[in-house]
Image 1 (cartoon, rainbow, N blue to C red):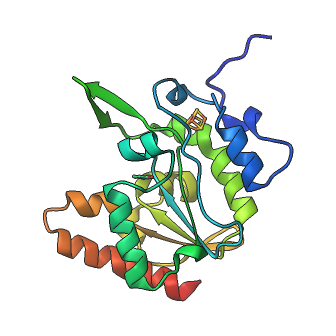
Image 2: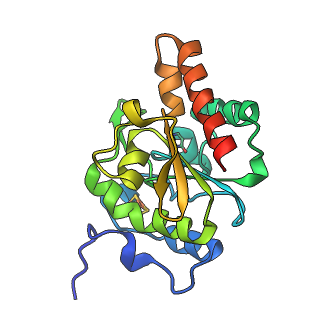
Length: 205
Ligand code: URA
Ligand code: SF4
């Protein structure tokens, strides 16, 4: 049988659902074309018993090189927010809606490209499996891509951020992506809103 490599991640799922098995299997995922140009799969990180699960968009340039989520500039905004919201690191599992870095080349520079709806859908089995295994009480949805992956295409972060909404057996709180804080004209104002949403998440869990 000829395999079509654009049919999503489902056929790469392991039989046993635990984080180690998922991570190993995801390293070989070819469920969409993004694996072709990226360095490696960037799987989620954190303890299986975490109360909080944070979901971003996709790895960035640094994450792609280092193989870990949120280790670049956006990660520093996130770390600061978590600390100021009183959310303990060892209570947090961090991941992304899409596990490979999507980019276009401009000369030698790799310019971040938003994942498409098809790529978000293709990668969804990994995110769904992480949710099933970690079983968080509270999911922090970081930006529109994570919202598209978890809360459906009609969810609007701008209108519905900062209020708990049901997500399976968990609750979810959406907020802006930490990269949007860095891009904002008024960074202090954007960060204050981001932190306020994280504080809602902290007291809802
Ligand atoms: N942006 C994301 O959405 N995820 C990362 O891991 C890094 C930057
Ligand atoms: Fe697989 Fe997701 Fe990577 Fe696509 S982005 S190859 S679905 S892990």
